[in-house]
Image (cartoon, rainbow, N blue to C red; front, side):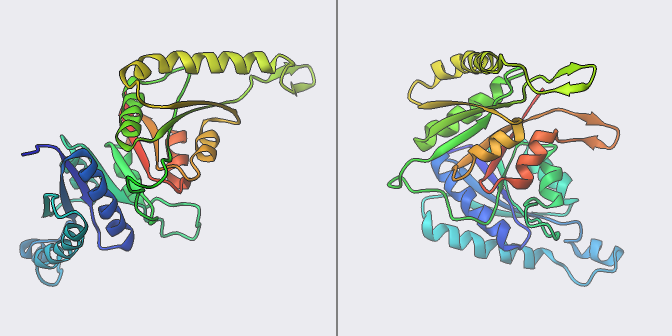
Length: 289
């Protein structure tokens, strides 16, 4: 009996249901169980009375989760699926439930007027505090008979993190996919009395140095996953743009989230923030020191 578990957060939206179906595929791939969870502050009748909310919402929430679970069991009859509701702040509840589980899967839900912003406030807040996969409402991942696509991982050649690379290599290995390791960089500007000048003529040398650093950082995870085909991709134009450009058609995008403490809480870095908002592929955010 497996002890691994994939957690999917549902809020009743079509995006979250698509995320649950995606999570089911991941759980099946991992040989893990699937837990469908709805978190909302007002679920019990006691809370309803204190907050002047009508009725007890827990049965309705469980019924909605059960319908999604039944759909999943039709396509994955051997998958263990359980449902649960939790009376809590959505962000706090999801983060707490995610502890010790393989991954947390959420659907993107950008409800503002900007179509390029794909992640809602809850998903973004959870991504700042826990490992999370964010899934837009796109078709499910390929089947085993479909042509292999790519897993894309963003690599900072100055401060790479082994946890991010290990996660990306493991995901590519499970999928039988190629891993594209992307490093985006900007040439150091030159300055003169008249202000900033174009990059120097030794640009090819700088690019060669960046490419060598990327290869060096991939040496250890490559040795641990010898069956994974790796494409080393060095691009000029900044880290976020490089990852987003490379992610078109990707099966998964993997980025790191450095622990950033602020008086108002943990914050996402600019690259993670940009990729989460604008990627049309699923995004895995892997925390690291």
